Image 1: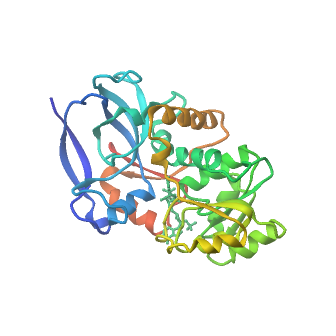
Image 2: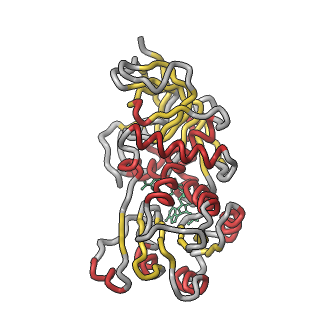
Image 3: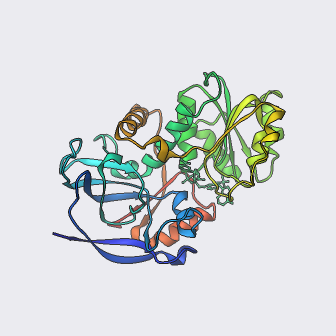
Length: 331
Ligand SMILES: NC(=O)c1ccc[n+]([C@@H]2O[C@H](COP(=O)([O-])OP(=O)(O)OC[C@H]3O[C@@H](n4cnc5c(N)ncnc54)[C@H](OP(=O)(O)O)[C@@H]3O)[C@@H](O)[C@H]2O)c1
Protein backbone atom coordinates (compact mmCIF):
# COMPACT_ATOMS: atom_id res chain seq x y z
CA UNK A 1 0.00 0.00 0.00
CA UNK A 2 1.20 3.53 -0.67
CA UNK A 3 -0.11 6.82 0.71
CA UNK A 4 0.16 10.30 -0.83
CA UNK A 5 2.48 12.88 0.72
CA UNK A 6 3.13 16.45 -0.38
CA UNK A 7 6.84 17.18 0.05
CA UNK A 8 9.43 19.89 -0.56
CA UNK A 9 12.35 18.76 -2.72
CA UNK A 10 15.23 20.26 -4.68
CA UNK A 11 16.40 18.99 -8.09
CA UNK A 12 19.52 21.24 -8.09
CA UNK A 13 21.59 23.04 -5.43
CA UNK A 14 21.00 26.77 -5.20
CA UNK A 15 18.80 29.46 -3.66
CA UNK A 16 15.39 29.17 -2.00
CA UNK A 17 13.77 29.18 -5.47
CA UNK A 18 15.00 25.58 -5.85
CA UNK A 19 12.51 24.42 -3.18
CA UNK A 20 9.59 22.85 -5.05
CA UNK A 21 6.36 21.34 -3.74
CA UNK A 22 5.93 17.84 -5.20
CA UNK A 23 3.43 14.97 -4.81
CA UNK A 24 5.06 11.74 -3.62
CA UNK A 25 3.88 8.25 -2.65
CA UNK A 26 5.08 6.72 0.62
CA UNK A 27 5.12 2.94 1.16
CA UNK A 28 5.32 0.59 4.11
CA UNK A 29 8.26 0.65 6.55
CA UNK A 30 10.88 -2.08 6.18
CA UNK A 31 12.76 -3.79 9.02
CA UNK A 32 13.94 -1.25 11.60
CA UNK A 33 11.83 1.53 10.08
CA UNK A 34 8.64 3.41 10.94
CA UNK A 35 6.22 5.56 8.96
CA UNK A 36 5.33 8.86 10.63
CA UNK A 37 2.63 11.39 9.70
CA UNK A 38 3.98 14.83 10.55
CA UNK A 39 2.00 17.36 12.53
CA UNK A 40 4.93 19.80 12.41
CA UNK A 41 8.39 19.95 10.84
CA UNK A 42 11.41 21.81 12.25
CA UNK A 43 13.37 24.39 10.22
CA UNK A 44 17.14 24.38 10.76
CA UNK A 45 20.13 26.22 9.38
CA UNK A 46 21.57 22.88 8.23
CA UNK A 47 18.68 22.77 5.72
CA UNK A 48 20.21 25.87 4.09
CA UNK A 49 23.67 24.26 3.89
CA UNK A 50 22.08 21.19 2.25
CA UNK A 51 20.03 23.31 -0.16
CA UNK A 52 23.08 25.24 -1.34
CA UNK A 53 25.27 22.12 -1.54
CA UNK A 54 27.70 23.36 1.16
CA UNK A 55 26.89 20.02 2.81
CA UNK A 56 26.54 17.74 -0.26
CA UNK A 57 23.81 15.11 -0.72
CA UNK A 58 22.55 13.14 -3.72
CA UNK A 59 19.85 14.85 -5.84
CA UNK A 60 16.90 15.06 -5.99
CA UNK A 61 16.85 15.81 -2.27
CA UNK A 62 13.95 16.08 0.14
CA UNK A 63 15.19 18.47 2.81
CA UNK A 64 14.56 18.49 6.55
CA UNK A 65 16.14 16.84 9.59
CA UNK A 66 13.52 17.34 12.32
CA UNK A 67 9.85 16.58 12.84
CA UNK A 68 7.06 15.43 15.13
CA UNK A 69 3.83 13.54 14.51
CA UNK A 70 2.02 10.25 14.90
CA UNK A 71 3.41 6.78 14.15
CA UNK A 72 1.33 5.29 11.31
CA UNK A 73 3.15 1.99 10.75
CA UNK A 74 5.98 0.05 12.38
CA UNK A 75 8.44 -2.26 10.59
CA UNK A 76 9.77 -5.61 11.72
CA UNK A 77 12.06 -5.53 14.75
CA UNK A 78 10.97 -2.11 16.06
CA UNK A 79 10.03 -2.51 19.72
CA UNK A 80 10.14 0.98 21.23
CA UNK A 81 7.30 2.48 19.16
CA UNK A 82 3.74 1.37 18.36
CA UNK A 83 1.12 2.64 15.90
CA UNK A 84 -0.59 5.72 17.34
CA UNK A 85 2.38 6.90 19.43
CA UNK A 86 3.15 10.60 19.49
CA UNK A 87 6.78 10.80 18.38
CA UNK A 88 9.57 13.22 17.42
CA UNK A 89 13.05 13.03 15.95
CA UNK A 90 16.20 14.70 14.72
CA UNK A 91 17.83 12.55 12.12
CA UNK A 92 19.81 11.72 9.06
CA UNK A 93 18.93 11.06 6.28
CA UNK A 94 17.18 14.34 5.41
CA UNK A 95 13.54 14.20 4.34
CA UNK A 96 11.24 15.72 6.98
CA UNK A 97 9.79 18.46 4.72
CA UNK A 98 6.68 16.37 3.95
CA UNK A 99 3.34 15.13 5.23
CA UNK A 100 4.56 11.60 5.93
CA UNK A 101 7.74 9.59 5.50
CA UNK A 102 9.35 6.22 6.14
CA UNK A 103 12.58 6.48 8.16
CA UNK A 104 14.93 4.60 10.51
CA UNK A 105 13.21 4.02 13.87
CA UNK A 106 16.40 4.29 15.91
CA UNK A 107 16.34 8.11 15.72
CA UNK A 108 12.67 8.40 16.68
CA UNK A 109 11.52 8.70 20.30
CA UNK A 110 8.13 8.89 21.98
CA UNK A 111 7.12 12.49 22.67
CA UNK A 112 5.80 13.15 26.21
CA UNK A 113 2.10 14.17 26.26
CA UNK A 114 3.07 17.44 27.99
CA UNK A 115 5.07 18.56 24.91
CA UNK A 116 3.15 19.80 21.86
CA UNK A 117 3.87 18.55 18.35
CA UNK A 118 5.11 22.01 17.37
CA UNK A 119 7.52 22.15 20.29
CA UNK A 120 8.60 18.56 19.56
CA UNK A 121 9.33 19.45 15.94
CA UNK A 122 11.22 22.60 16.95
CA UNK A 123 13.28 21.14 19.78
CA UNK A 124 14.75 17.80 18.76
CA UNK A 125 17.63 18.82 16.50
CA UNK A 126 18.19 22.12 18.29
CA UNK A 127 17.60 20.86 21.84
CA UNK A 128 19.68 17.69 21.45
CA UNK A 129 22.43 19.92 20.08
CA UNK A 130 22.34 22.08 23.19
CA UNK A 131 22.32 18.89 25.28
CA UNK A 132 25.55 17.64 23.75
CA UNK A 133 27.15 21.10 23.77
CA UNK A 134 26.47 22.11 27.37
CA UNK A 135 26.60 18.60 28.85
CA UNK A 136 29.17 16.78 26.73
CA UNK A 137 31.38 19.34 24.92
CA UNK A 138 33.32 20.51 27.94
CA UNK A 139 36.73 21.89 28.84
CA UNK A 140 39.24 20.03 31.00
CA UNK A 141 37.65 19.60 34.43
CA UNK A 142 34.15 20.31 33.07
CA UNK A 143 31.97 23.34 33.73
CA UNK A 144 30.60 24.39 37.12
CA UNK A 145 28.09 26.98 38.29
CA UNK A 146 29.47 30.48 37.86
CA UNK A 147 31.74 29.63 34.93
CA UNK A 148 31.63 31.93 31.89
CA UNK A 149 30.90 30.55 28.42
CA UNK A 150 30.44 32.50 25.18
CA UNK A 151 27.57 31.45 22.89
CA UNK A 152 27.26 33.07 19.45
CA UNK A 153 23.86 33.67 17.75
CA UNK A 154 22.23 33.45 21.18
CA UNK A 155 18.79 34.63 20.02
CA UNK A 156 18.38 31.92 17.36
CA UNK A 157 16.70 28.51 17.60
CA UNK A 158 19.66 26.72 19.19
CA UNK A 159 20.69 29.92 20.98
CA UNK A 160 17.54 30.56 23.03
CA UNK A 161 17.48 26.94 24.21
CA UNK A 162 21.16 27.29 25.19
CA UNK A 163 20.53 30.51 27.14
CA UNK A 164 17.84 28.84 29.24
CA UNK A 165 19.68 25.56 29.76
CA UNK A 166 22.87 27.39 30.74
CA UNK A 167 20.94 29.41 33.32
CA UNK A 168 19.48 26.16 34.72
CA UNK A 169 23.06 24.86 35.07
CA UNK A 170 24.14 28.05 36.83
CA UNK A 171 26.49 29.09 34.01
CA UNK A 172 27.23 32.72 33.16
CA UNK A 173 26.41 32.61 29.46
CA UNK A 174 27.63 35.58 27.43
CA UNK A 175 25.46 35.65 24.30
CA UNK A 176 26.21 37.46 21.05
CA UNK A 177 23.45 38.52 18.65
CA UNK A 178 23.00 40.76 15.63
CA UNK A 179 20.73 43.48 17.07
CA UNK A 180 19.85 45.10 20.38
CA UNK A 181 16.38 43.51 20.20
CA UNK A 182 17.90 40.06 19.79
CA UNK A 183 20.27 40.77 22.70
CA UNK A 184 17.29 41.68 24.91
CA UNK A 185 15.56 38.43 23.90
CA UNK A 186 18.64 36.41 24.84
CA UNK A 187 18.84 38.13 28.24
CA UNK A 188 15.11 37.45 28.82
CA UNK A 189 15.87 33.77 28.21
CA UNK A 190 18.77 33.54 30.65
CA UNK A 191 21.90 35.03 29.08
CA UNK A 192 23.82 36.70 31.91
CA UNK A 193 25.41 39.20 29.48
CA UNK A 194 24.89 39.99 25.80
CA UNK A 195 26.99 41.61 23.09
CA UNK A 196 25.64 43.06 19.86
CA UNK A 197 28.46 41.79 17.64
CA UNK A 198 27.26 43.90 14.71
CA UNK A 199 28.45 47.05 16.44
CA UNK A 200 30.60 45.96 19.43
CA UNK A 201 34.03 44.30 19.55
CA UNK A 202 33.04 41.03 21.20
CA UNK A 203 36.62 40.07 22.15
CA UNK A 204 37.09 43.31 24.10
CA UNK A 205 33.67 42.98 25.74
CA UNK A 206 34.32 39.37 26.78
CA UNK A 207 37.63 40.43 28.36
CA UNK A 208 35.83 43.23 30.18
CA UNK A 209 33.01 40.99 31.46
CA UNK A 210 35.43 38.28 32.62
CA UNK A 211 37.90 40.82 34.08
CA UNK A 212 40.60 39.82 31.64
CA UNK A 213 40.36 36.06 32.26
CA UNK A 214 38.37 34.92 29.21
CA UNK A 215 35.78 32.16 28.98
CA UNK A 216 36.16 28.42 29.51
CA UNK A 217 34.27 27.55 26.30
CA UNK A 218 33.18 29.34 23.15
CA UNK A 219 30.26 27.68 21.34
CA UNK A 220 30.62 29.09 17.82
CA UNK A 221 28.09 28.31 15.07
CA UNK A 222 28.74 31.47 13.06
CA UNK A 223 32.05 30.19 11.65
CA UNK A 224 34.00 32.33 9.18
CA UNK A 225 33.18 35.74 10.70
CA UNK A 226 33.87 34.79 14.32
CA UNK A 227 36.21 31.79 14.52
CA UNK A 228 39.61 33.47 14.98
CA UNK A 229 38.20 36.10 17.33
CA UNK A 230 36.53 33.35 19.33
CA UNK A 231 39.97 31.86 20.01
CA UNK A 232 41.00 35.21 21.50
CA UNK A 233 38.11 35.01 24.00
CA UNK A 234 39.38 31.80 25.64
CA UNK A 235 40.89 31.51 29.10
CA UNK A 236 44.07 29.36 29.25
CA UNK A 237 43.24 25.71 28.38
CA UNK A 238 39.84 26.86 27.08
CA UNK A 239 37.80 25.02 24.44
CA UNK A 240 36.52 26.39 21.14
CA UNK A 241 33.65 24.28 19.78
CA UNK A 242 32.87 25.30 16.20
CA UNK A 243 29.52 23.64 15.46
CA UNK A 244 28.18 25.60 12.49
CA UNK A 245 28.97 27.89 9.57
CA UNK A 246 26.12 30.43 9.33
CA UNK A 247 28.56 33.00 7.87
CA UNK A 248 30.58 30.39 5.94
CA UNK A 249 33.22 27.81 6.87
CA UNK A 250 36.15 29.09 8.96
CA UNK A 251 39.48 29.39 7.15
CA UNK A 252 41.85 26.40 7.58
CA UNK A 253 43.47 26.48 11.02
CA UNK A 254 47.20 26.76 11.64
CA UNK A 255 47.39 24.72 14.87
CA UNK A 256 50.35 26.85 15.93
CA UNK A 257 47.94 29.62 16.94
CA UNK A 258 46.64 27.39 19.74
CA UNK A 259 49.96 27.68 21.57
CA UNK A 260 49.02 31.18 22.70
CA UNK A 261 46.86 29.84 25.53
CA UNK A 262 47.05 26.03 25.10
CA UNK A 263 43.56 26.08 23.64
CA UNK A 264 41.53 23.07 22.50
CA UNK A 265 39.43 23.10 19.33
CA UNK A 266 36.69 20.68 18.31
CA UNK A 267 34.19 20.49 15.46
CA UNK A 268 31.33 18.35 16.82
CA UNK A 269 28.08 17.33 15.12
CA UNK A 270 24.84 16.07 16.59
CA UNK A 271 24.83 13.03 14.34
CA UNK A 272 27.87 11.47 16.01
CA UNK A 273 26.18 11.96 19.36
CA UNK A 274 22.88 10.34 18.34
CA UNK A 275 24.39 7.50 16.33
CA UNK A 276 22.74 4.81 18.48
CA UNK A 277 19.21 4.43 19.75
CA UNK A 278 20.49 4.25 23.36
CA UNK A 279 22.37 7.55 23.13
CA UNK A 280 19.43 9.22 21.35
CA UNK A 281 17.00 8.12 24.06
CA UNK A 282 19.31 9.14 26.92
CA UNK A 283 19.88 12.61 25.44
CA UNK A 284 16.17 13.01 24.63
CA UNK A 285 15.25 12.06 28.21
CA UNK A 286 17.59 14.79 29.49
CA UNK A 287 16.06 17.31 27.05
CA UNK A 288 12.46 16.33 27.88
CA UNK A 289 13.25 16.69 31.61
CA UNK A 290 14.41 20.32 31.29
CA UNK A 291 11.43 21.17 29.07
CA UNK A 292 8.73 19.49 31.18
CA UNK A 293 10.22 21.01 34.37
CA UNK A 294 9.74 24.45 32.83
CA UNK A 295 13.47 25.29 32.98
CA UNK A 296 13.57 25.48 29.18
CA UNK A 297 10.69 26.75 27.03
CA UNK A 298 10.69 26.09 23.29
CA UNK A 299 9.99 29.46 21.76
CA UNK A 300 8.47 29.28 18.27
CA UNK A 301 8.51 32.73 16.67
CA UNK A 302 7.80 31.73 13.04
CA UNK A 303 5.21 29.32 11.62
CA UNK A 304 4.93 28.67 7.86
CA UNK A 305 2.72 26.39 5.75
CA UNK A 306 4.90 23.56 4.37
CA UNK A 307 4.34 24.96 0.87
CA UNK A 308 6.04 28.22 1.99
CA UNK A 309 9.37 26.57 2.78
CA UNK A 310 11.17 28.96 0.39
CA UNK A 311 9.94 31.98 2.39
CA UNK A 312 11.10 30.30 5.59
CA UNK A 313 14.59 29.80 4.10
CA UNK A 314 14.76 33.41 2.96
CA UNK A 315 13.87 34.65 6.45
CA UNK A 316 16.40 32.35 8.14
CA UNK A 317 19.25 33.37 5.83
CA UNK A 318 18.36 37.07 6.13
CA UNK A 319 18.81 36.80 9.95
CA UNK A 320 15.15 37.85 10.17
CA UNK A 321 14.10 35.04 12.55
CA UNK A 322 14.40 34.64 16.31
CA UNK A 323 13.94 31.44 18.32
CA UNK A 324 12.65 28.39 16.42
CA UNK A 325 10.61 28.09 13.21
CA UNK A 326 8.26 25.30 12.13
CA UNK A 327 6.69 24.25 8.83
CA UNK A 328 3.11 23.02 9.11
CA UNK A 329 1.98 20.32 6.62
CA UNK A 330 -1.68 21.15 7.32
CA UNK A 331 -1.06 24.91 7.18
N1 LIG B 1 26.94 20.80 14.54
C1 LIG B 1 25.73 20.54 14.99
O1 LIG B 1 25.51 19.47 15.56
C2 LIG B 1 24.63 21.53 14.83
C3 LIG B 1 23.33 21.18 15.15
C4 LIG B 1 22.33 22.16 15.09
C5 LIG B 1 22.64 23.44 14.65
N2 LIG B 1 23.92 23.72 14.29
C6 LIG B 1 24.29 25.08 13.87
O2 LIG B 1 23.85 25.97 14.86
C7 LIG B 1 23.55 27.23 14.25
C8 LIG B 1 22.18 27.68 14.71
O3 LIG B 1 21.20 26.88 14.07
P1 LIG B 1 19.67 27.32 14.04
O4 LIG B 1 18.98 26.40 13.11
O5 LIG B 1 19.20 27.47 15.45
O6 LIG B 1 19.73 28.76 13.34
P2 LIG B 1 19.51 30.22 13.99
O7 LIG B 1 20.52 30.43 15.09
O8 LIG B 1 18.09 30.38 14.33
O9 LIG B 1 19.86 31.13 12.76
C9 LIG B 1 21.20 31.41 12.45
C10 LIG B 1 21.68 32.72 13.09
O10 LIG B 1 23.06 32.86 12.83
C11 LIG B 1 23.39 34.23 12.90
N3 LIG B 1 24.27 34.61 11.81
C12 LIG B 1 25.50 35.14 11.94
N4 LIG B 1 26.03 35.41 10.77
C13 LIG B 1 25.14 35.05 9.83
C14 LIG B 1 25.13 35.10 8.40
N5 LIG B 1 26.17 35.59 7.71
N6 LIG B 1 24.03 34.66 7.76
C15 LIG B 1 22.98 34.16 8.44
N7 LIG B 1 22.94 34.08 9.80
C16 LIG B 1 24.02 34.53 10.48
C17 LIG B 1 22.08 35.01 12.85
O11 LIG B 1 21.83 35.53 14.16
P3 LIG B 1 22.34 37.04 14.51
O12 LIG B 1 21.62 37.96 13.59
O13 LIG B 1 21.97 37.22 15.93
O14 LIG B 1 23.83 37.03 14.27
C18 LIG B 1 21.04 33.95 12.50
O15 LIG B 1 19.77 34.25 13.03
C19 LIG B 1 23.71 27.04 12.74
O16 LIG B 1 25.00 27.49 12.35
C20 LIG B 1 23.61 25.53 12.60
O17 LIG B 1 24.25 25.05 11.46
C21 LIG B 1 24.91 22.80 14.37
